[in-house]
Length: 153
Image (cartoon, rainbow, N blue to C red; front, side, top):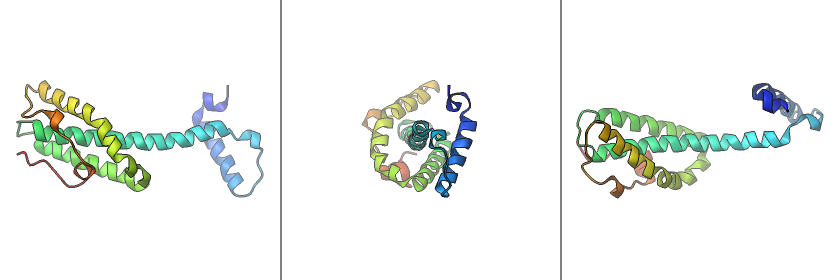
């Protein structure tokens, strides 16, 4: 069993130190570098960023849907705050990883069905019926990440 399997923190500290030494021109024993797990960890960083963006997009979508289908007047300000916070977090991720912007349309399309179900379930939990069919709602990137809000009250 490797150090990666028993203590990933210690493994990452050691691998990082070895890579810094190597980058600085120092010779290191290549056998000490755990290349397969280093590659896996680097790839997982990208997947993690994409997953975080997807989560924020899903949250924004759910609350945009609530604003459009809910007959309630009281929680709307909170939903708008949640949308603003989600947009801000998504934009921060996109600043750090701008290539993720290329996948926004796919993320929106993938998250929309679940966001619809969650919005309807939240309304149902409060005894509300949607004022319109959420399956008719679609959103583009500008609506999800821009300043747009539905016109509903």
